[in-house]
Image 1 (cartoon, helix red, strand yellow):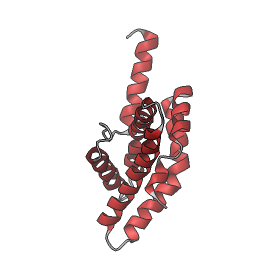
Image 2: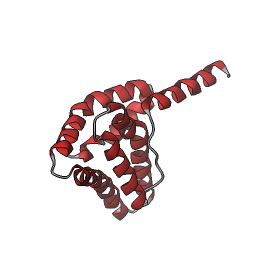
Image 3: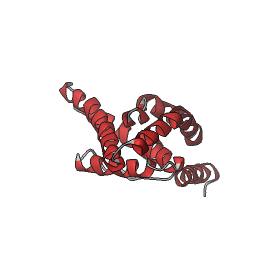
Image 4: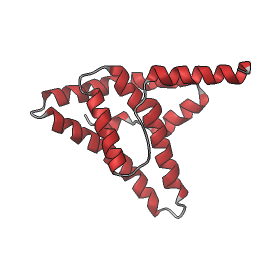
Length: 150
């Protein structure tokens, strides 16, 4: 099992997020990756050096994102790479990091922190680790303000 599988198909996640509420989209993502995340956590626990295994999983994740976006650099229109990175950042902020935090697995947060550190080292953009409950409250508050004028 590899941490890059946590990103799944970010384009589909993004469409779901636009078409449905954040809560529905997140719960679908959680259902799809829960077992994968448990397997990754178990592999890290069973390794001889859990810290190194965590960093390797994070590197696999970041490398998968870079491979996807770098191949788009060869395309005539450069905006495609920027759009892809923005989509990945949104997926990480709204799905990957909150799922890792919410899972409460032993190595989930060390994995999230390693992904974040490597992401910033590669200068792939500014992202932070967020909590699902905080994001959900923000969406609900924003929608209430839009529809109730508050």
